[in-house]
Image 1 (cartoon, rainbow, N blue to C red):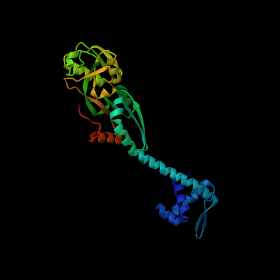
Image 2: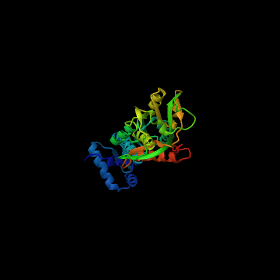
Image 3: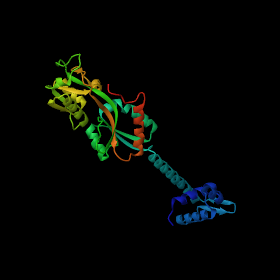
Image 4: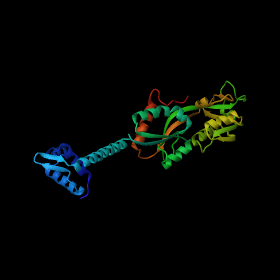
Length: 305
């Protein structure tokens, strides 16, 4: 006979009740099969676990030692079962989250603290990443969810826009377009343009080109930056002008002038993105928090401004 978990459970019941009848009732089995299982266990171990008397049973010295180990086994099985149930409910596990810097400032501070409070046993791994890098990580399974700049559909990914804003024009200090009245995009026809690299943020790259195309102009002497922060740096250094979200004002410098645009160019500043298909429960729970925080009065979704 090979010892099985049921033998351990049966032994603990008899050891705690010190009565086969009460132990059988507790286990919801008949007494004769219980006695057979205990004898099989004793035969497997090669020792007597109980002294049987007319008044009942008592533990032998070997039985008392085995009881300590048996209880630990049962406790460990119970903890394992509980952990599995938690994992199934999404209350236990590991969530890998990527985000652009702006998401760390405007969205994640609303979502992460609440999710951690409601799911204290889920380990959250946060990583800063650009939009395209996040897309690649989601497709390979290296990340579970990302907060990026995107609103258009993406092959193999689900996209949930969360925060939108308007583009504004930024120019070097003292530039001819640095004035109080709004500028027309057509006035940029012969200006060197600083843009976010398409490899970093294809959505913002295409959104900028689309706005300029709608105005009937083609970008001149394009300079590509690796981030919005870098865009501002290039403009501050006099390398050109740029269209950036108004929300980037917090990163501005004294060497940059902000000019409103006549055209209302609205773009998604932050969207939640995850792989298409079945969603693990832990991610589903996280998305529930994202959606609820987005829909609240103080949520992270704000219309074009």
